[in-house]
Length: 195
Image (cartoon, rainbow, N blue to C red; front, top):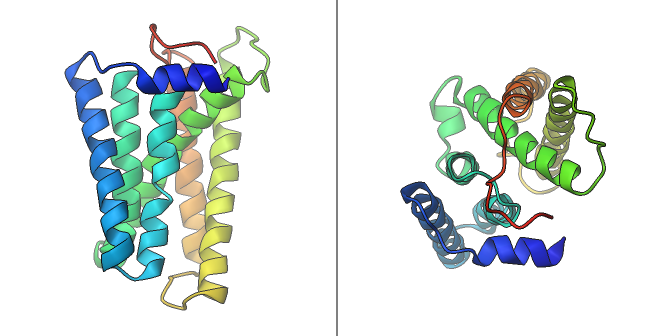
């Protein structure tokens, strides 16, 4: 699995979308490094959490459009926190949870499939169910991270019961949409190194 991920990572970009996704990745890396020296540590930590999915989307060989959407979505989600857009724009939190959890559920679906965790059944329902469950699990983990940050790091993090349930519901819907799309379209590139 690791050699294939490395092969996908070093594959040269071939399309405009490939180049754009790599540009977003490069900008994300630079911004995270600069934030280490210019922003409070909590903001740096939030931004740095965007790097694993941004890099992983290329390493697992996502289709170039999905790769770009993943990079932009994850970094916008982190940046919205740092810029306090979740407080400034009503409903932005739910939109970001829906889209971000959807793309992360798609990434999880590829990893679970390639890792042999889910058996290929040939049924269209499998990606829908697995993606939705993965998205709900990711949403729950994110909400626990938010609670931990609020409880032990800073009370500036907005945590309420309604916000938590709303975020998880939006994430579940996004993951369901990703599963429906995955049941009809390939999430990975044709030229990727198989994991």
